Image (cartoon, rainbow over all chains, first blue to last red; front, side, top):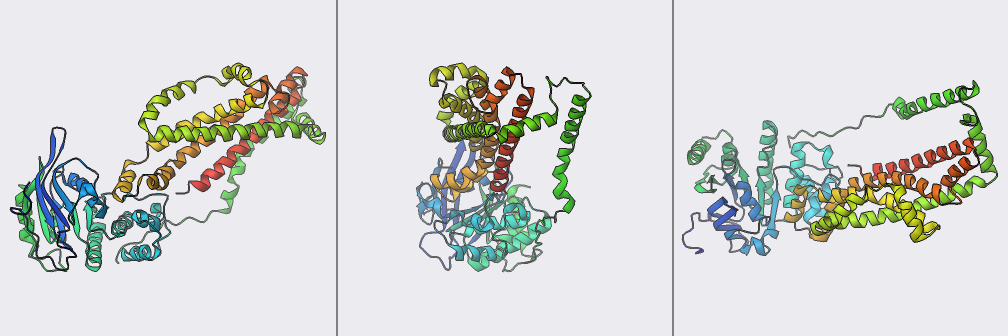
Length: 258
Length: 262
């Protein structure tokens, strides 16, 4: 497992990086469940403040990749480091995660849900985040009174609450209707602009991957491995219909073999 | 933010709805009237089924004589002590077996099979062990209260949403904190269902205990009524059990509604 030499992906010139290490560095990652190989030879580097999308067909190991990075899967081969520390040795502490479903504690208020990963009382910051995600005034509301989109934004605020080095999102919009999905995508970009977290978003939606990412990583399936990495050289803020996105979408679908 | 804000509005309750529960009293009231009529016209002989007014008079005069208070107090005391003991032990074993697979595999088959032993079967053994005193009765009641609490709490803990546990893991909440913040609240509804069942069974077991070995208590009144051929006392005691049984159930239901409000 040689480290730096022949990586598939070089980090883009990182501006505003807070350390020498990339926010995320994965190399020669391999994860198998028994005889089934979910991920193989995955190399991926994400720089500080970057927004990277990972797209692939269902069953390509996208979710497995996120489970490895969040420390939910401890047995794998290869390297996975967050800001230079192995995910198995505390690196995953620096990761925030937004699941496909909001996964909020139903008995806890919005504020308590956002604060779930925080150690001490930190009301100012939590309240700030609650309003950052557009839920001002809903701090004391219980999840069952929120719409799907709002609940997902609480989950986003929770992911950002302790300022993780890396924010992971696992198909966060796939359960939403088309219109809400567009709103939430733009909303995520807005929050990303303001708070500048490093983001790795997994999706099976080609359009979404191209629209949101600075770079798009295309995973092929069985076993999941990086097929292609596509730079999205379109200025932000982007239009969904921007001409520059068309070739990106084409090369994603091309890489997916569709 | 162009997001639609939906907020579930609670409909203001109609005045009429507040009295809806009174509907539940209609059929019992009709039954009491029917009972009264049937006894008065002589369908039932008064020495077998006294009329509702006779029963009420008997209860009233016993209350005035101060006789009733002692019986009711001792029964309530036994039930309370039994529930306290049974629920505590149920929570303890429910938690241990819910959290640790090994404890579950070791203990659950035992509890599952002992729960099927009829309550009355224990009475002779408990009398032998604990004598005729309070110990035997309280233990028997505790046994009744234990099983539903144990079963529901253990299952409640085991079935905590895996997704929420993963959230706790991703956010590094720590074992103890995730117990406090995720597992216990998630299992709380099941625990309360168990306590409600346990309280119900406690009343069943107190009758068993008092029928057989007591010189005081509502259950003793029952058997005393049979010995003395006083059907009014028997029916009165049954009504007392009904009253206090319902009262305790309402109390637990109230707690349930207050605690599980999500």
